[in-house]
Amino acid sequence: MVRTLQRDVSAISMFRQIIAIVAVIGILAGGFLLIYVQRPKATAATMRIEPGDLVIVGYVGTFADNGRVFDTSYKRVAEDNVTYPKAASFGWRNQWTNLSIEPVGAGKVIKGFDDGIVGLAIGDSKRIVVPPDMGYGSPDPTKIFERPLLQEVPAREVMNTTAFSDKYGASAQEGLIVKDPFWAWNATVSLSNNVVTVLNSPAIGERLRPYQAWNARVVGIDDGANNGIGIVYVEHELTAGDAGNIAARDGANQFIVSSVDPVKGVYVANYNREVVGRTLVFDVTVDSITRT
Image 1 (cartoon, rainbow, N blue to C red):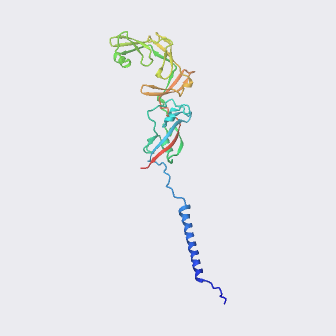
Image 2: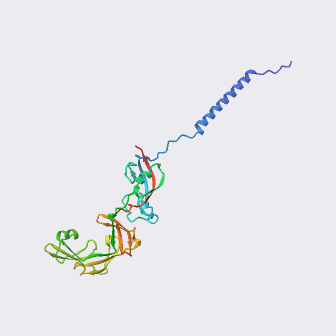
Image 3: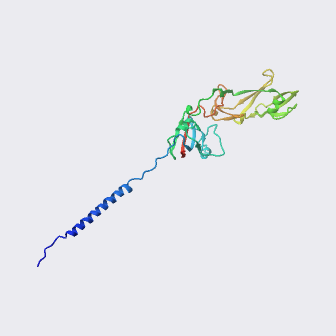
């Protein structure tokens, strides 16, 4: 007897349940991948310099008009005069460390620098151009002096014994030969009571080194000039090319030979700091930022 085929209803129902479970698992797995795998992780906001922060930056400071380095925090820059030609007032120091500003915006550095680093993050580099009004201000005209290239120096000087001792570091004695502390030429002492007369006695053509900064020479002596005081004529061997290239120290004060005019026969000694009245350029890189 032939049996007729019958549908296994229970098996079909179980199969449908398995398919439904697999589908649900697939949807859940896809959602997990979408949310936790494919979505990029949120990152913390980058810290950028704000007023009040404590920061450390490296820098190279140059003049906008000639590109010469007047200051830097990097020893490698200080040592390299070929790639980084130096300004006249550039000075060597014992330690080269990056600049610590504590805090930003409090006037610890010039305003143009202070304002220029705001908004930078660690590792950022930026070129900051600082005009004089945001830097070191305008020059003081009372600190600028025009001097002759052919200088007249008194051949005789009269002083008391105290002044002589202060200038020459010795007690005045008749016939004493001393070295002039500035010109380094010989001078002869005459003493009468408390009055000391010093006769400067250089040789014509004698080479000199004013301020230990440039060359000069004695070109003439007139013993009878200036009512018998006499004049030693000293020629300063400065050229137009020396302008801006020579820094000298006059006692405790430094000055720059800012211009030389051979036609007028003068040079200008500027006792303002070299950065005063100049547009400055700073190439800075941020090392660290600390927010308090």
